[in-house]
Image 1 (cartoon, helix red, strand yellow):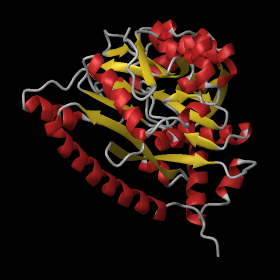
Image 2 (cartoon, rainbow, N blue to C red; image 1 turned 180 degrees about the vertical axis):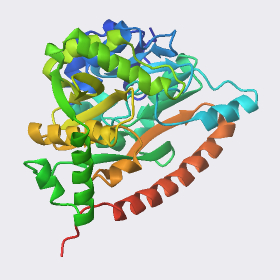
Image 3 (cartoon, rainbow, N blue to C red; image 1 turned 60 degrees about the vertical axis):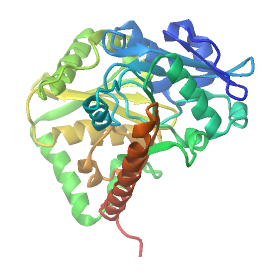
Amino acid sequence: MTEHTPSSGLGIVAVGSIDAIGRDNWNRFAGTANPLVSYDFLEALEASGSVSADTGWQPCHLKLFLDDEWIGVAPAYLKAHSMGEYVFDWAWADAWQRHGLPYYPKLLLAVPFTPCQGRRLLLTDAARQHFSADQVHQALDDVMTAKGAHSWHLLFPDADDQALLASPATLHREGCQFHWFNRGYESFEDFLAQLTSRKRKSLRKERRQVAEQGITFQHWFGDHLPDEVLDDFFLFYNATYLKRGMRPYLNRAFFQLLAQRLGQGLRIITAVREGQRIAAALFIVGNDCLFGRYWGCLDDYNHLHFETCYYQGIDLAIELGLARFDAGAQGEHKLVRGFEPVLTHSWHNVAHPGFRDAVAHFCQEEAEDVARYREAALEALPYRQEP
């Protein structure tokens, strides 16, 4: 355990497991809006062994204090590599290595393997009024030094964290994802009616071609998930990584724990052809957002990925009355299907002063490129223009 690191009243204690904080304590700061920062999700990663020192994800969760009052927590890890983060710093690590300097371990504030936006500094609203960005950054610098890390990185914060972190003197990166927004649609056809005629016909054709292959879909809830369905899902999930020559990040025990704990908040949608499951996608239901996270398929079927991961997700978001559908990282292919470009953010600091100016210059140039990319994406959206 790391002792309090004071910074004008802001102190941080680092602990080696989320169990050391406890479900009730964690969730009173995390709330219920985003299950991906809940105790149940994060503890399932640890209990299953998906995150551990052996996998290069040593839990190092933070307890935040204002003087002696406990005011928040943050998911954090000491990383021995840069895999599973979705904000890529391989070039930074390479530069350190080429100069004979260690880049790892690094302190990472993030949800493992999950590029979703949300609060990372799980603070009470009242506490947020007491700190400046410089104080927060200094406190994280202190933890970085105390844990022997060479940098810290806070990934995919929401607008509330952005306001708390923003400072001209800090290292800020931007990226772009594609999210679908529910504008009061009552059906998929309502959504299609907002697209241009050509795109509307294209999406209908894709859905029709999936059906013409004899493929249907079944929905499964986490608290009524047969073992054989979980087995098939895990097989498909593994195949996604093995096709790229990679080992999967998550194991079956994680998905089983998550299904048991999230219950109705976890959905697996399976594609079925000739009585056999051929593909599956997993979704997690938040208060106002549907998160599409994992998918897999053993064979190639025309448009099956788009149907299973996107169109079935849009149907589900409309059915549940959710405002937004976050289908994961990457995806210009999402753009033509009505997913809109959304800026993502991350904040960083590096201990080595000689590299800091170079990293700051990189972040500035990257942000300019991302801004141009997002503007071009906005112009390419398939929605009808209002007269």
